Length: 233
Image (cartoon, rainbow, N blue to C red):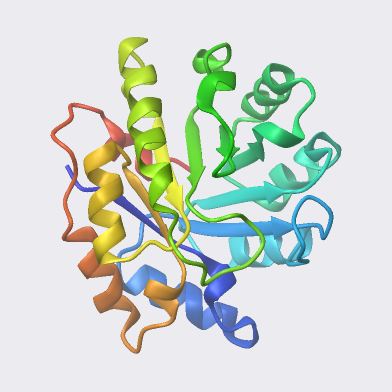
């Protein structure tokens, strides 16, 4: 069973986002990862609902929308309406995480939780049944092109074991930050089944070839039915 590849649109040329979407589709990417930053939760500003709406109008790929913002509950409905298929909030930014996840799912979207590199995964234990995706950050969020933090790899393994022990085998474990062929292999072996890749896709001359190289890494020996869920939008 193949891992899923989610090119990060943050690393594309913003003057040619339509071309970036087309390249991802031609390269047989599975999702498009969209980083939303507010300049408060992270030290950068990126895109908002209008761009998400535009991306949705020009691509059939599911949009994996990562909200790196304070008080994300204020904007969940708007991002859902704009076309987000997966809505990911940070554990560190949510006062009532279970309520937030339940609301996302009530909108017909997959609910995700992101963890910064230094955040322990213990906070996931009490909301396991409400999570469709965990996004493990292997860089401190805010900017693309950062170096992979090696010490986060054991956390990926711990999170995968947590869901397996609960019998929740269809949860996506995504990894974002410094992902390339070398680091991708490491996180897959630790239990990840979605690779979010920015510069290692859009920073290459041939986007299709770059995606193919990541897909060729394979997947861990798991019975998780991620393939059937991957194209749900």
